[in-house]
Image (tube, rainbow, N blue to C red; front, top):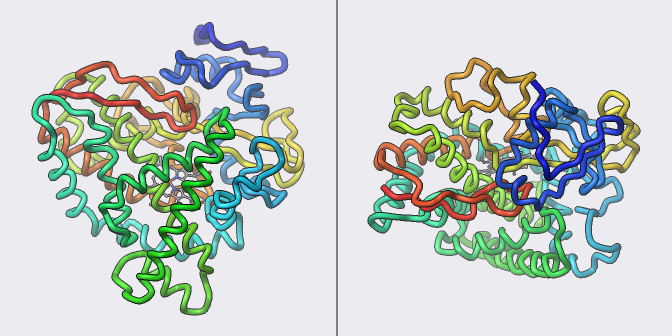
Length: 415
Ligand code: HEM
């Protein structure tokens, strides 16, 4: 069935060109209405506001993320070259971090950095954190003001930032400062950023990196059991990691280690509450809890678009030729609701037989933190709803005006 066209977008089926402002409130409040229409019209579209071809079919996104003729590293060697103007001197600290970040690199450097960090994030290691995550979730709930609370600052944010800071061995009371640096840096990836966004991001990058350099110097003198000490040991043992790579990896883990999890927690609570009834039914067994978290990831993912550069001329989809250096967009949130890949894609059904999602990406950049994020979501959501089964929305939550990072402004709940 072809869905009705939302009034705020224009789509030409002949050229597959889409006009849709990602800052349109009706869109960022509910992108799934537009996705449903586009799935019926064409899941490959030239999105004019971004200026590149985007793909929203599940198989296309899955295939293109794994296609090594595309990659995240800018072929011109300039990280995040989609900047304002050509002069990037005001972004030197930010660029310095990206230039050494595995997320922005391709093999062989990507493989070396990822292999070093990955050891700490494999499921077996992460599973050992379960009791700590459980204790922390309970502590945070104990601290809720009676009656009503905004779950984002009181629960969704402090949990992942504390866990990743503890893993790395960074002082946990730095949490608010880390959050602030991180928010300023990730603003660089939003559509329509300004010179002020860039200046602020660069200052945050400089301060964050100075802080970590000081911290690394301290840890060198007094190593601990933490990930930073492990990475320092790897650096000292045969130069596997330069000082800049060490600092970039720590910043990437601290930022990526909470930004998406915070939003996914908020989106998941919202999705579960929207089902009505006793929320504890979604957490009746470890298997049910795991399935609920997978469905939350599919149903309302926090990251909706990632891009890739083409390294050669490629036919990315039927009749869509992308030249070397050109960008394509991969719409993870749209792929997760593809009617070709899912029966009843719009329904929240943790018991679905076709359970899968692209929320953590695919291919060589597949989220390194997926086992940790899954564990945090399973433990935090189960603890929250088991302790507060009467939890309900105190007001209708609204999404922030940031299409890429699909998350709520606030999540006021009563219990
Ligand atoms: C629900 C929570 C999360 C979601 C939805 C998510 C999603 C993603 C996605 C989609 C990518 C791939 C980007 C691309 O292909 O261009 C990615 C990469 C990455 N994520 Fe996550 N992430 C989450 C939590 C975490 C956590 C907790 C950590 C940290 C420990 C983390 C660390 C990373 C890193 C380091 C990469 C880069 C991997 C690489 O380039 O090889 N993420 N994440």
